[in-house]
Length: 286
Ligand SMILES: C[S@@+](CC[C@H](N)C(=O)[O-])C[C@H]1O[C@@H](n2cnc3c(N)ncnc32)[C@H](O)[C@@H]1O
Image (cartoon, rainbow, N blue to C red; front, side, top):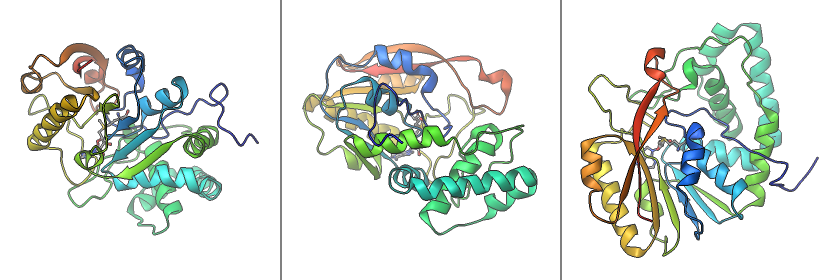
C-alpha cells in the first residue's frame, strides 16, 4: 500500500454528503480563487469540498479547518488517526444493514456509542443510509433523519477514506471544533478565508437545516459580516457563499466587496421539484 499522499494518484472527496455541500460548485469556486494565498482557512467546513480541491490542485498550502459540529470534526480526526480500526467497524455496519436494513438503521440511530471509532462509523453509516444523505439534529442534538431508499448504498467506501486519511496525515492541515469567530485571530495579510455558513431561509417555507443544536441566527450572520470587514482591513483574501437575499447584499454593499449571483442546483431538498436551479451569492474582496 502507498504510504505517501500522491496528488497525481489520490483524489480524496468529501466523505459525507452534507446539506449545502459545495461539490457541484467547485468549477465556479475554482474560477473565483485567487492565484496566490498564504494559509487557507475554512471555518464552516462541512464535507470540505473546496478543502479537498485546494489540497489536491494547489501547492500544498497550510490549511486551518474547523466546524462547530463536534461529531463531524471527530470524524475527520478519527479518519486521520484510526483508519485501520474504523474500516472494520464500518464493514460490520454494512454486513448488519444487509441483514435487515430497517430495524438495523433505527437501532443504530437510537444508539449512543462512546468510543471515537464507533461514534464515527455511526455517523458515516447513517449518512450513507439515511433519507437524502442529510445530517439534521433536533433541539437536543439527536440525529433525527429517517431511513432512505437505497438498493446498495456504498457504506464503506474504503478507497476514498484511505485517500482522505493519507491527505490528512501528509499535508499541513490543522482541524478544530470551534465557532467561526474563534479561529481567525492569527489570520494575516495574504491568507485566504472561505466562509460557507448555514444560509438564512430565503422564505418562511424554505427548508432550514440544523447542523448542530444551535441554529445559525441573523445575529450570527451579522457577527460574520463584521468579521469579514476586520479580515478585509487586515489584508486577508475573503470569499463567502451565501443566500441571494437583500439583507446579505446590504451587509456587503461597501466598495471592497464584489458580489456575483451564481446558479446552483440544490441536491438536498425533501421536495424533488425544488431541487432544480436557484441562485446564491458569491462575495469576495479581491
Ligand atoms: C453550508 S455548511 C458547509 C458546507 C461545506 N462548504 C461543504 O462543502 O460541505 C455549514 C457548516 O457550518 C457549520 N456551523 C454552523 N454554525 C457554525 C458556527 N457558529 N461556527 C462554525 N461552524 C458552524 C455547520 O455545522 C455546517 O457544517
